Image 1 (cartoon, helix red, strand yellow):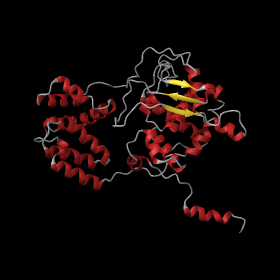
Image 2 (image 1 turned 60 degrees about the horizontal axis):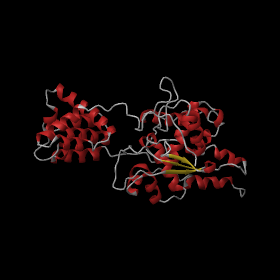
Image 3 (image 1 turned 90 degrees about the horizontal axis):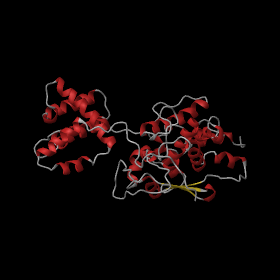
Image 4 (image 1 turned 180 degrees about the vertical axis):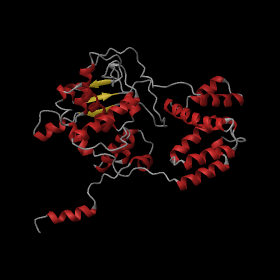
Length: 376
């Protein structure tokens, strides 16, 4: 086993850009306090929200609060009709149903409620949301948002290879993209990966790597089956190479990229978080989730530009999760194994939100390609 030494200053993962306690959370605290709950209970209840959720709710609550101020309405005590008026304005502006749901969730958390029910559970509000869902049905992409084959081919060429001589920027974003694709993890989970000796080990000969998230990491969704699993990846087409194709495929090896990335960052890293900044003045400091997302998106965009193509609009780092799991299913990995790998409680989440059509040529294309046979 190879031990990895680091110059980290502390064991905790890097903090998100914003962790301030929002006015919306203050309203919720006031509501909980009004019903007689002790402060220690309130702290625990409010800890149910992930930091990212708190930040999102804070933004939505501020929008609603500003809307109320213009109408001389008290936000956390507004009437049902005033709440419905706000939601209708969101509909009229063309907001997606999923966005309106987030607004309502944020308002419900901070509003005093109607009777013994939260604002979002009032009969008229529930009926309104059912109607909104029919008017604006949830749509998700059914086809891949970008070409995985093109991107993988591009990662085997300049400016991403030869890996030992490429710039640190291209080594960094390539490593991030390969790990996003081969683990199908959320960006938050990738950000929490650590290189302290208790979290990272290479097998002899670098044939496999075992990587853990930082022990203090708490995922966005904590299911009943949540645990802190070991990410194990075997080397992909390692040397010695039997063919030129094997050598090219080894350029996509996440173990090879990880080893090179750790070696290249060892001299300046200031934290045991796996991904650290390569750019001044933050060189060596732990990367935020937002910046890691930018790395993944940039890697895809760079490949497209190097191939002479315009990157698709609306690229998102989270798309790697659906891309990876959809291709894995197409190549024969069972839904059960997919759920285990990405911590889904059931295949319903995959089917509803992530599954893409990567089945290859359509029936029509298969028929038309018959015209290329030697029989004509």
